[in-house]
Length: 246
Image (cartoon, rainbow, N blue to C red; front, side):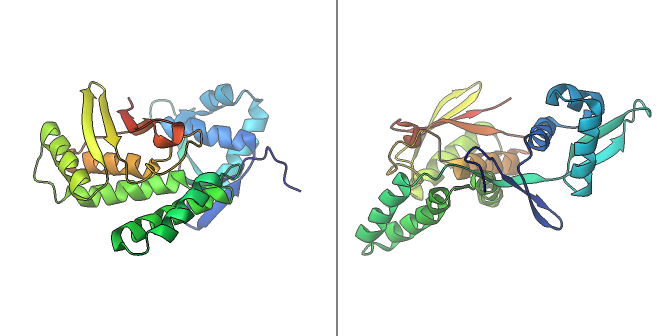
């Protein structure tokens, strides 16, 4: 029997996906998201005995989730880094916004654009209604789409790309973009395509949009961008707020 507090995460590998629910292994993988780390750093972060961490790292290496290299500055040390990315994780089912979207599907059959929009949202939120959080892989897909979109933008500087984004979002009915600040980059989207009709569910919902922004900036400007949604219709706000992370 699966306990209610079990947390399972799916990771992609070259051989398919792997499901993990070991708190220690998940903590190690989360720590390695920031870059390669030494064995001692992993031990300190996990707060477990060296022998325990050694076993977990060997398991993760055997699953092709982690790779090991000799430290170029000290051949006595081994460095560990991620060889995977998370795809999805388990969560408590959230059905109220899915039910709301299904009602929208019923009332939008005469408008092709609205109908396709709500079908997209039904697929997206339908997984969450069944206890599967797909935000990690949805963000990755958003980033891939954003990189493709950036090829159609003519601007090659930050101000120009921000103007292109504002125009693109409006013309494709994704919402109305406003640039609140540039240090750090802060973007507000009103009338957001992805969640404006969603009731408050206590969390942000626009991982696809996070990926879109990241893909556009990295694709067009060659810059490493990490955008995080801080406020959302899903958190009870009347807009979506995205902030660049250091």
